Image 1 (tube, helix red, strand yellow):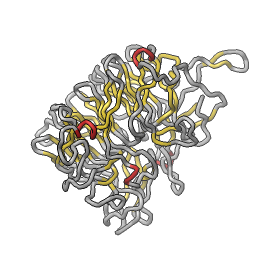
Image 2 (spheres, helix red, strand yellow; image 1 turned 90 degrees about the vertical axis):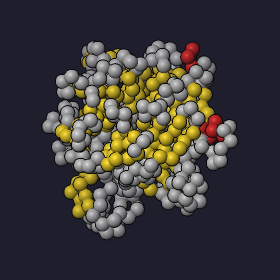
Image 3 (tube, helix red, strand yellow; image 1 turned 180 degrees about the horizontal axis):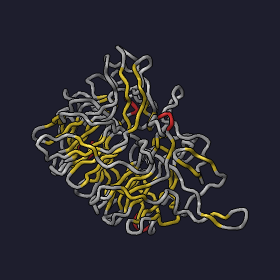
Image 4 (cartoon, helix red, strand yellow; image 1 turned 180 degrees about the vertical axis):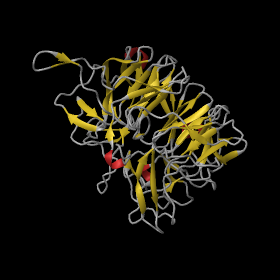
Length: 505
């Protein structure tokens, strides 16, 4: 997580090298060596032939670079990528693309949805998400996407513009609009707006067939808030295509922005994340922490601010209850006593368990100013609903040789914003990229073995160091890595990427 120049919130521990790092409870101690595992160089040939077991090979690049996008695997196997930012600054609507793209994993090609939908002869082109007046192509980043039981994809909220005004005069901020993508027609249709605007929120499909969105942020740095309102939400809403949106009557007990959401049996588990315990004075100009280049509205100078706190406890939502509401759920055991974790990677497994990795620990006061990257992992067991410790990130490295000539285990590697995905239906997990304690993107991946609960080494070199990317699980135990932020070849600084790569085993 990147802190703006005027604020120290969410700052990663300074002075850590990109390579061997020893960390304890969020404090980092740099080492001199740098390690990267073996891997394949970018390859423009046949992806299936080029990618050896447990290695990366280049895939076709998207039509546009993107960060803050979503990537959703459709029932037919294609991957839908929606929105995102193509350049900085984040609050220029011209830098947020209205285009969506579809990836064909057989042909290894990306095609803009507007190009496919144009063949239908409709006006306006249904390949865009139009505003209610059909005059503006809406633009969004850090939204959420969920595949419904019908196979359609629900797109919710985000940060951008959907106002009926010509660029560059379009209003910019958090969005409450929602859309449905229909794979059969390759087009979007307008859905009912959410009750509240939100971005950086969590979304999931529940076991009763409804979607749920929780938390998020509803303000941008520099935008005024009405009096006595907070900008980090504890509210939730559910959606079904027939009845639209229904607010959950009681708010969550805590805030879970930059947290995790998964199905745990018949329940929905919301865990980790952050809530700002603050109230805005009338017309206050909000400032905030920066995540993936977006400066959120989360701190109010002169307001009643008690602190920025992480959620200590998980929360369970039972969608089939007579009056569904949030109740206390499993609590992470990676920090004792629990201090809260944000920006942790996670993956739901075919076994019903849930794997968590990395993130940022907020210290004993649960305050974001104390944030430090973590190297720990844990597994939440479905049957017992308790956590088991997992191996450290970086533990697949080969042993290091000490000056005495003896060998010792390599130090673990703390990382935040690591992306995790189950490999096939094996309950094994691939951990990909993220942010190192020195703020640089991570250029490696690790493979976690479910049965033996250890990292299989050595670490795997990626073609591109990146964070803020998205993963898509393809057939044949392959995982597609899509876009994100990184230093492109020949570049000098991080920028949104259009490059993609495929891991296969």
